Amino acid sequence: MQAQLPFAAFAGRQALFHRLDAVGNKAERAEAFRDYVAVHFCLEELEKAGLTLNSKSRAKANWMRVLRGWSFDSDGREGAVLKGWVESRFGLLARFHGEPLRDFSSPAYLRYQEMRSAGLYGTNALEGQLDLLYAYSQYEFRRGDAAAKRIELFRGINRLNEHEVLSKSGRRQVVLFNNLVSFTSSRERASEFGDYILCARVPCEKVFFSHDVVPGVLKGEEEYLVIGGVYDVSISTL
Image (cartoon, rainbow, N blue to C red; front, side, top):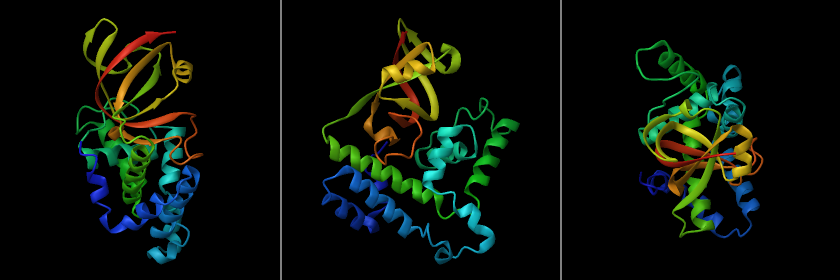
């Protein structure tokens, strides 16, 4: 994964990041980001984006609603949009959406694609909003600790067979996660979601969004949305 690529896609929007460079307070940077996205994508003046009265209801499906929808149900329409975004940007296929996705011609995969299409239909460049959100998340990580390469995150599960295990060695496993998955930075918080706790050292470039990038958007405290794929994890019990 090339961490710099999303920034290149926004070369014409460098004014945003130049402005953020001059803001020392993280909360103020988050507010500046919200304002920029609202103005750039006409989120509060949808008619300027060419949307008619009949299409305005879908255009309200902006980046914040998608993230909140994920918090409510990661296997819902908003979850399908986010997993589809990861597919299109990073080439990682969704492995699960309500049920396993293995066959492109299966009813399960077709339902997932229908939900993704329905989630994007009539929206105002929703995937473009997600592009910018990822770029901003990466900007905040670099600004907070430019030397950081990985972050230790936890995920609580009830059954070890909930994930695709590629190999095992004692308490360590190589796991193929879904293409987007929730973690937390708190082991105690992870323990609330299952009897087994997976611990992964996640490359910072694979953090799509976290609870503190734009506070108040995600329902879960200390939650991280991580681009999935293959991870070496350690397993512990409560």
